Length: 219
Image 1 (spheres, rainbow, N blue to C red):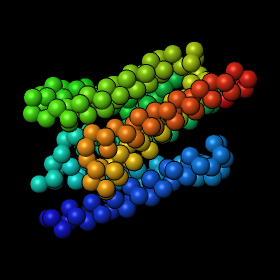
Image 2 (image 1 turned 90 degrees about the vertical axis):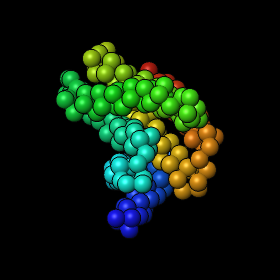
Image 3 (image 1 turned 90 degrees about the horizontal axis):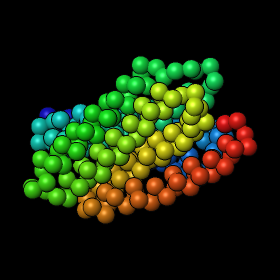
């Protein structure tokens, strides 16, 4: 059994590595170009496979880890929601689909579970409880915004690009965090939070930049 689990871990790391490289490539190339779209697809595929395998490994004997399981859901949510945001670029899409809502509600419930786990484990491990609070809070915030966006689609049509940037960048942040913590074994709170802090500046920059563009163009 342990050999099988190790094989899954190696495959998980391999696809995660591919996703990580492709993710950084999407940052370097011109936004909206054919290369950006190609690397984005590779990034999405790599991270989805890696995250799905992490869900399995996190439930295996001697490897059970609820936090990593929830982070796997967090990353999968980011990828699906980030790609789903592209569909709202088309004016022909007048309402969110069941799939769109399902992705966001699953993340909302997972975020709530993280907050509950933070409260339960606070007296035992404050460091991980803080991480539960941060990732759980982010999950609740983003999924709640998704649901609000879906319900007011006609009034906030141009925000699809902001949702795409935020979610895909968030998925890259999660992959970098996983590499630092699991790959480099730098598992303190700095290793967990540094990518999120730095990535937030990147997301803020591009959202501000696209806000300027949406005033003069039809995104």
